[in-house]
Image (tube, rainbow, N blue to C red; front, top):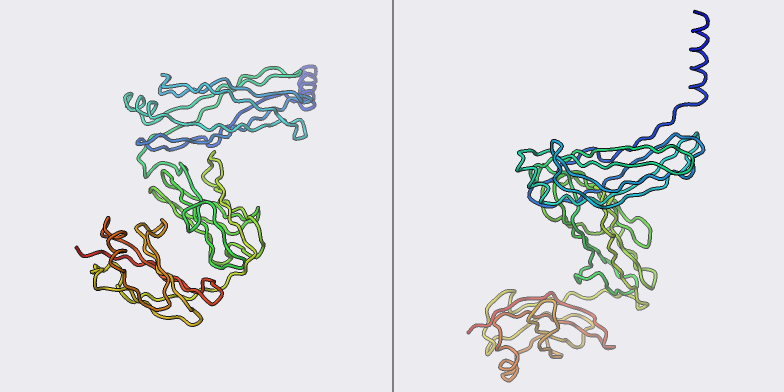
Length: 362
């Protein structure tokens, strides 16, 4: 009896001094809900650990992934994943591998044909290298097919732009109220977290719970606003922390010019009122005068974002289109826009009006 007890004690001591090596791989997330009506792309992070001591050359490798229902293959992913494990101390080696995984609509359709809403995605990993023994590891991510509203939040696309609907804009020094916008196309519902960043510095955080929809629009805050004190280019980005995604972060750039911003007067348009139908032969255009403005430029536009089709300078606060101008420039369409800009003695823009719309009576 004493001999058996002595052997057991010796085994315990050996196991304590030389623990058995093990390895594991854990996917994050372990499960995900996706919408049946659209192809979804998820990001899986594989956490790989290995406790074999003095093994600095171990690598994890997976040749492919497989979608299945009840053991029946629905599709495969022929994409190799590899990672080198790093020494974290105390004999623990670990590594991370990220996989951007599109779930094809064909896989969802095959699952529905098998009358199943649950799909398994499996990957087999092999750890080898150096003096360590080889390990074959497998992991499974459970995928549930559900309605669009019940699916986990996922990001499809997002785009940055300024008030000119472009990712580039020029402003003057100390110009206020400069804003950037981001349109985020998404699927599903869940917690959304992100933040605005300017030149690598965090401007503000955004935390919202999104329910099923199509697009989220977020703008930079009024306070603190985008800084315009330093001349030169400045880079604006919007970083999405949650949900995890693998989309390249878009950037927007604004250029601050040396000229100091001066506040413009608001020129009030009087007639015709916005969206009114007018007779160009008899109806003119009128606006209020502003102090320190010596001349006005009236512009006519056939599209709000395009260049004027016709413009004219005047020192008065009213203008009537001459007959030749009406015939040549205003005969193709019956809807146009107009605005007025005011200039000071030094030909600087001192004021600007809103853009009004008018229709031409036939």
